[in-house]
Length: 155
Image (cartoon, rainbow, N blue to C red):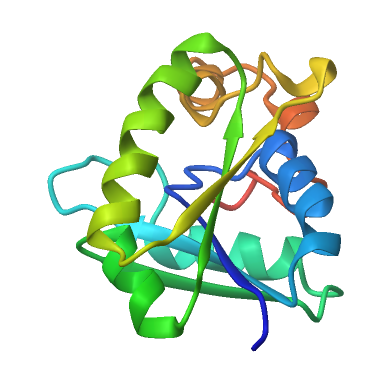
């Protein structure tokens, strides 16, 4: 049975921190779905189509990565595609406290899905999509925090 994982998130936008987590997880799995969770209650800076396009560009040369999106529960999406694992990056203790609870709920709702936590490398631990969005909204240069494939000129 192939080892399939899901790396869920809003990726609004994808950051170099996200890319680093995926690259570290790739040797552990046969396939990783990078899946955008769509929440109708949330206000996004970038459209779903734009975020999917960026993810596809960033991971175009990686055959083990599939880009997708889902609505509703992450655990249900995992069951639908046959994923046994979730991947989550941790930047700090607050991330751990939040993600630990979510992982326990996903384990129950997702019929035994396990969550793999990867601790961010120090050079990426300060980067979050939230902060990058604020830089973009404020007219700052967010390029140091974004993969080269993510260009904001035409957005």
